[in-house]
Length: 130
Image (cartoon, rainbow, N blue to C red):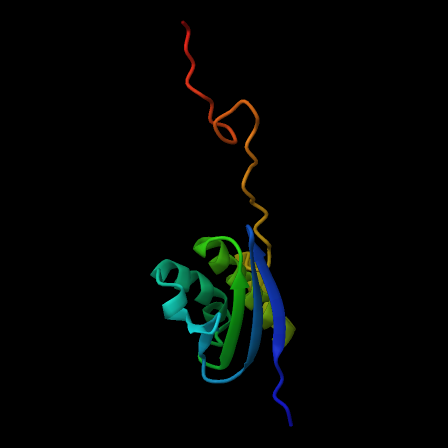
């Protein structure tokens, strides 16, 4: 009998993470590299592990992640979102805990576009009276 795998997609900023979760020993791979190798900052690894530790399934499932776009922080947020959605597909009872912590909400913040006549989105060029 084939083992059951749960697929989910997570997004944040310009990053998109495709998460595949199945039974295993708790190994997390990101783009065919280990979690510690891909996300070298401890804070990013902590962000990714938050939903797994919240529902108490750490060490019970292997997670394979493909992530693209954005920077490291955006990718970590996308992975967390994807893992949370995969956990719900696995067990719908976890939804309440995950929703309460805000892991199911896609962070809507995006980079504001640069405006013409300005140095950036809001920064202005230095004003000269004379």
